[in-house]
Amino acid sequence: MNRPSFWPEHIEFARSPGNWFNKSIQFQSAAEILFKAYAEAQRSGPPPQLNDDFGKWQQGLSTHMPCIICLGYAIELMFKALIVQNDPEVIPENGKVRFDTSHSLVPLSVQADIDLFEKEDKLLKRLSDYLVWGRYPKT
Image (cartoon, rainbow, N blue to C red; front, side, top):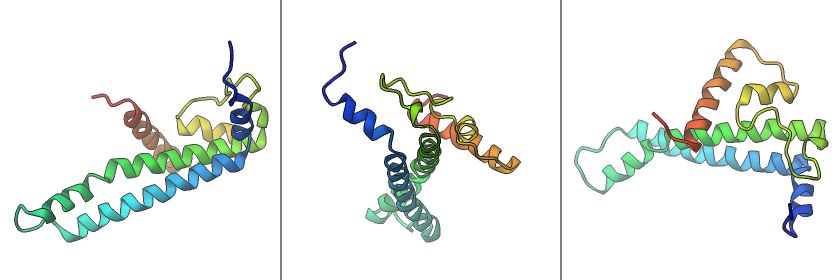
């Protein structure tokens, strides 16, 4: 298989835990922005009439799911940063990444060597459901 000319730089970039960490921070920041919009819509309650404010209020409430998904992405990327830090060979030269799972947070936490409390385990399982649903909506 012929790799594009950027491939060696891509592999080098992916082998840097700091790059995974920086992406994690970006998604965490996005989640905070979305949460603020959601919280403001919750605090203000629905406007008394259908006008421009109603659209802003409704838009604020619609940020709930994207906020949770961004938070889940942030955690996923943080786990992957730790995995890469502990074992850079998880990103081999051929580009076939060797994470134990693609997006499921509990197996990633195990691979990152993080011990979880029962409540954390349950929370990560729920976040994983949001991550899968956010990528591949289903009923």
